Image (cartoon, rainbow, N blue to C red; front, side, top):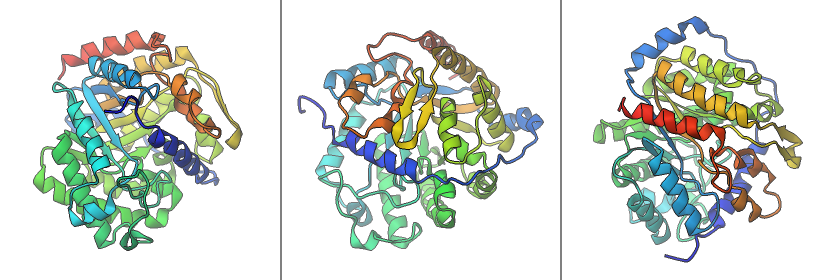
Length: 393
């Protein structure tokens, strides 16, 4: 093992996120209207009796020490272990069902060895790129390689795409043995970025999910949507067919980022606690499927992103209030699981990032521990909530 982890992956993430942010629609959109009184009745058919809570293991610095401490915090304070793989697919090897490139397979082996034995697993995969409309880049012995010719400009439901993604997802399930599988991290974003390709994605999803369900009937499968997108009239209507085929509705939700949504024409979340209470009440009224918060967080520091003339307000007290409400709402609405996106502020990692990384400020301070691992007020609320939830597992 090298003395410190490679930085290329996280630095590439900066570039990809910046590109994805710039591709948002700018046309004002309206919330799909619902009867909110149906929310309580909608929760009961889900059949969920106990919510799982956890974090991703996104590190607060590039060092091996930071990675080890992050994992230690996550494992000790979670009832679910989250894995996100959204940095590319070895399309050529996946199509041939051949061994993966050594670099990638070594990464998977390392992640598998680091998985705790006592926690259930959520695995998120991504056939779409960070722009949430294009096919995800190819990866190999280098993180970025040229997309194979047969995948260039291919529809999302092309036979070679469906076969390669099925082989890739099957291999991931066999290696990581998840109880919950996300077959499209924020894939619902295609409804906003390029809705004409949504039917292609639906067919890709149907093909892969149907095959995997036959092999792994006990794994619950779905995709995730940004809640700011899903609440809009066109997305809410278009998504119903795919949701009906899924075992759960996955959500990405950052209530402190209302200004981010509004900047790109999406409806505001609201002020104070309404910024999470109203959107989460909306989604429970929208569906009686189990709900999974695949990623969420609330920033405790103000941030300014000059590239987009964007200001985000942070508040340590509102973060604590959100965490407290999350446990109550998850219990009330029968959530499958909640994944707080990262446990520790990545101030140290951010200081090492290159110029142009301002967009990464949006998630820099959503940790429940600050960059020096000092607890914020929300931390004790989280720990107490997780302990209470253990009795429901």
